[in-house]
Length: 433
Image (cartoon, rainbow, N blue to C red):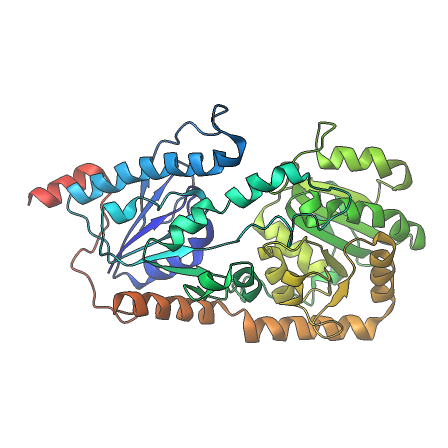
């Protein structure tokens, strides 16, 4: 089969399915993306030049759509070039969030399309207005509503949609849900596995050494910001550190902004929260290593005695899935996306997002209760084995592709093209032949 993937940050959410298809050694896989350094052997990247975005002359409520149609125009040109060189995919798979796929129907009208539908924005539910510390101005509601313009166009392209959780599906209007399948995402259970030896040896991270006698509390986010409860976690630290001298805390994440906005005062959220709470925190026992290697990240989860995962009602992080697979005792915020993964007192604990003292108390209780810790660890891993297995995720993905194309990629015949093209020139020679 011939696959065309589209995502501005290759490979995005398609890492596992792309690797899966490559491993079959029977498919031709092209990927349209902005240029980056990521590589997967067996995949031909088709880079497009990022257009000028965030045009200040465009009304602020329409800028996301304006950016999307600019990307769509650029991706159209790349796709049209592929068509001119003789490439016709059996299916197009991509993320609808940035508008890149909006014009691909004009290139291949009859090719099945599977679009990743991540989130439907609302101004009066979910993330907006959830945290009273950051109230939203009603004058901003038109901009939030308009963020769904790409969603609406995408849903009317005639293709199919996919989303990774039932809660994310629930954010879409009733009329849209019937067009979107839930393809429950999995994790690599071998890479994300418990290690009973992790507590027997020192762990070094960010210049700090966690000894076997230390109690390690972990927190992970792509970026340290309010959407993932960073400000709440920072306010819980003084309670934790005063209560026990053997606690050490590792807070993994960058200083950028993945969701929401930067502090109005300037700087980063880490700087902001250290100004607010730094005098109450023993910084000899807290480390901010930034973004770390995957190996270091997994090693830290394996060593964790209590892993705190907080989020607004928004898209759940991969780190939640991976922490459960590793067998972490997870304390997750009692918010809708987390409740889809954690059953309180079974495979984790649910804690109130907005209450730092209650979060600290729950962590301390867990550190004291060895029987509860063992139960949560074992049940977290069993939950992952039953619900988060990568094999199940990929089989569901294969089935979805098969339903749309009439051919399951896992059973598709071997294509007659053993090697992917390495350049446009190769495609041209093949077309000429």
